[in-house]
Every structure is written in structure tokens, then in C-alpha cells.
Image (cartoon, rainbow, N blue to C red; front, side, top):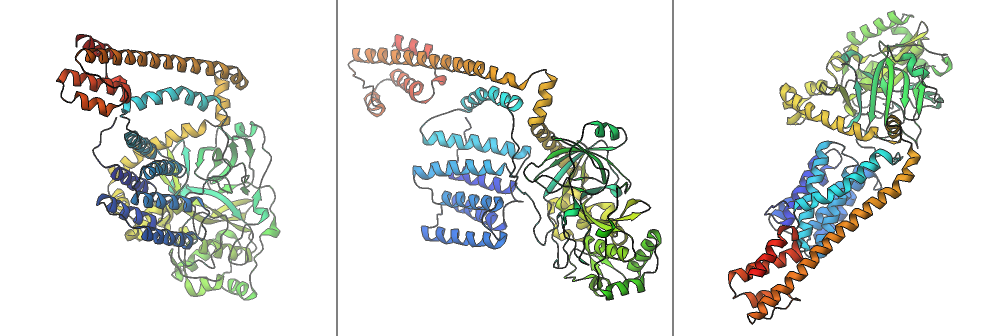
Length: 625
């Protein structure tokens, strides 16, 4: 077993500190600060009294309520649990406290695995578990070794493998919204409501990963979420006509586009309302079936049966065919003075000329891109007064102009960019990559139009993170700045990230449908499992009975050795009680080294760990006594 000569409270505080460093995206600064202060107090043997702990608890309750606006939420629960475990650690006094802290930390790091899905967290979990088990056994006066724990683990592995490959896995309908954007943060939202937003802050929480066959040029890294066809003149709420659900078809649709399309394997980190896809998707392949999407409307997900893993075949280039254009959904709901202003400043009627005219106007009037534009209440406020904004402002303004000029236009809410991992050929898309652009209907097709490219071309060329780092380096951590300046450091991060990707790809692909494919490959029918279960139970029971019989045989040998040792001592006039170790040690304290050594080995073999002592050697020593 691991031998770390450190107080158990210090070990537990170190585990909490490591946990906080891994969960920094989920925990608030208040929780992180509390753990840091608490760890220092544990190190210096400082404990707050009951009144102080109660005040801190009430303060935390108020802080979380103010931060999240609610107390029943996965992220709030994680913060509460972390704080409670830390406070309990600061009042550790009795054996009951020790057990509560042990099980509390186990529960905490287990719950953390719902938010953190990477190999580093798996290793942290395993290492923490062994450290905690060591202290747990120590408190029970049991001297266990790591080898004993590993042997126990080996017993579990065959059953785990059987469950993983053969027993159906259920899809969890209550996925945690890890890293979801809050008001005032960058992030994907199905609606575009900009009249109340004054500032957006960075949010680098991952949203999804996309495995591709080859790297995609930055200018084409548009990841569609959903379209928005209705506007009140400035904001774009999500309406029923923007949702599209179609019965799943046969695999013929998949074969139709498989040769020439852009193939993507997408893994979403939390439940979303819509399917994501690169640019213009043609076919979605989910565990439930295949659906052909021959328009560029949004494909919504079923709330209670979300797909967190699916494949997409799409096309690039910004053009997609359509079925029938619903022109009544593309009206410009503007005030007369807004329409008048647009007609006065923009004369062109065709899309290519009007696009050039709008772009020229933006440059002539010195429009700028910023995540902190302040409050922009309506179209004219933006076009005449503010002249500053982010992607949503520009997309909304240009779409209104196009509609007044009788060109159907709509917004697309999704992502632009992503960090490419060259070792595993996948993109990681975060909330910082959230983006809004336009699709305009021209000559029977929807054409992508991105006004952000006119105002801030570096946002498209560099990607969101590099663009923000270039614009505001002080808002980023020194680690990220260091990684951008030194390519080798970024390569190291990507090299480790590929193993996270591959590890969880294996785990998540072996769901019910993955198991079905695996069983088909080995020509095994799932119903045969019901025949194998009794056989496996009989096998495990037989092994367990054999293991117990071996333990019983060893116990019998130990019992016999104790009696022979007692008889040897009687011949020397020593009457050794077998019911009390303390009395036995007191009697043998003055005896020679050989007797005391045999006594110690008998005690260790009987009450601590019989594997450390060779029974045959011990019996020989007793015979020679």
C-alpha cells in the first residue's frame, strides 16, 4: 500500500485542492477561495468554531443564490457539496467525522465525473481513491497493501467487461448543462436577443468535438446550430417554423451522399436543443436511424431522447438547395422611419450589389467590432449612433436591410472556428466560438453571408480564441498566453488531449446501438445473455467458495499454530491468554527475541495481513522453539 507519512487531514485537503483545480470551470471563485483558505487552516491546525462555520454556511447559501439565481441546479449542488466537505474537514474531531469526510470526498469526486470527462480526472479519481482507502483502513486498524486492493480490482474486471459489452446501457435523459452560457457570456443560444445585452465575457467551456477526415480551412469552419426566420425588427426569437423534425429514413440516404460529402463524427458534451453540423448538412446518422435534410432548416432534438453522439455528412461552400421558400416568414417588422432610412441609404436591389453597398457603408462610417458595445436598443440606434457591436448586431442589421429590399434573409445561430487537434484529427468547439451569421435567398438557393468578415476579418482568419487573445491579452490566463507564444507547449497539450478524445470515444460508442453492432460482428444474439447469466453466477460462486475454503484452511493452520505456540510456552511456565493481545505483550515483554518475534508474526498473520507471513516458515519456527 502507498506509504505517505502525512496527516490524513492534509491528504484530504490536497485532494480537495486538486479537485478544485480540475473543476475550475464549474466551481465559483467563492468556492475556490474557501477551499484554498481551508487547506491553509488544515495545514496549520486551525479550526473555526461552530458559530463561524454556521455564518460561513449561510453566507455561501446567499452567494450561490445571487450567483446562479437558484439553488436547485447541478452546478450549485457541486459548489455546495465541495463547501460542505471542506467545512466538515475543518471540524474533524471524532471517528464519526472521519467516516463522514471519507464518504463525502468519495461522493464529491464521483459527482465531479459527471462534469469532467477526461483521462486526467480518471487518474485523479483512482489515485485519490487509493489514498482515501489507505486512511480508511488505517482508522479501522487494518494494515492493507495496494497489492491487496489491486487483487480485489482484478476480481471485478471480468464482470465489468461483461456488463460493458453485453448488458444494454440506458441513455440518461437528464444531461448536465456543463459550461452552458449565462447572460452576459459568450455562448450558443437558439435565440438572438441583443437589445438588452451590453457586454459579453469569455467562456471557454467545451460544447462539442468533431472528428473529421482532414483539416478544414478557417474560412469554412461554420458549424450550424439553428436558423431564425422571425424578427421583431431587431431581436430574433425562436419560432415553431424554425424547428424541423422528420421521420428517420433508411440507410439509402447515407449511401447517396457518402462518397462526396464531408464526413463528421460529433460528440456533444451536454444535451442541446438542436443537432450541430458543419456548414450545410445533408444527412444525420444517429443511433436511432438516418435522416436526410434536403433543406437548411434546423433539425431539432427530442427533449427526452437526445443524441450526444451522431454522424453528419455535409457539403461546404455556403450554398444549399431548398424545398419551398416560406416568404411570409421573412417580413421586415420595422417601423416606417426605419424603412425610410434604409431606402435613403441603400439603393441597390440585387444581392451582390447590395452586399457591396452595405460593406462600403460600414467602412465609410468606421463601424467597429467589440464584445462590449453597451446597450443597443434598435436598428437605427446601431446604424446611426453606436456603430459598434459584435456578430449578432451586424447580422441582425444586415438581415433587416435585405428584407426591406425584398431579399429573403434569416439568421443562423451556431459556431465559427474551433481548435484543431492534429494528432487525433478533431476540432474542439467551445462557447467562445459561438457565432451568428446570415443566409440570404438568391437564385433559388440559400447563400451564406457573414458581415463580421467585413468588420473583423481576423475573427474568421484566426478563430475566436486567438482573436480575443490578440485584442485583449490581459483577459486570458498566463498559461494560455504562454501556449500561444510557444508552439511546442500547445503541441504537448494537444498530444494529451488526443488520449482523452480516443478514450471517451471508445466508452461512449459502446452504448446500446454500439453493443448491437459489436454483437452482430461476433455473431452473438443478445437474448443468449439470459443463458449465460446463470453460468456466470455459478462460475463466480464456485470461485468465491474456493476462495473461502482457502481462507478457512489458512485460518485452521493459524489456529493450530497458536495452540502449538501456547503449548511450547506452557512448558516454560508461561500461560499465554489468547483473548487479549495487550495481556500477551505484557507477559512476553521480558522474554527472548525469538519468542517475541514468533508472537509478533502470529498476531500479524491473524489480525492484519496473513500474506505477509509464510505459514510454513512460522510453523517451522514454532517446532524449533
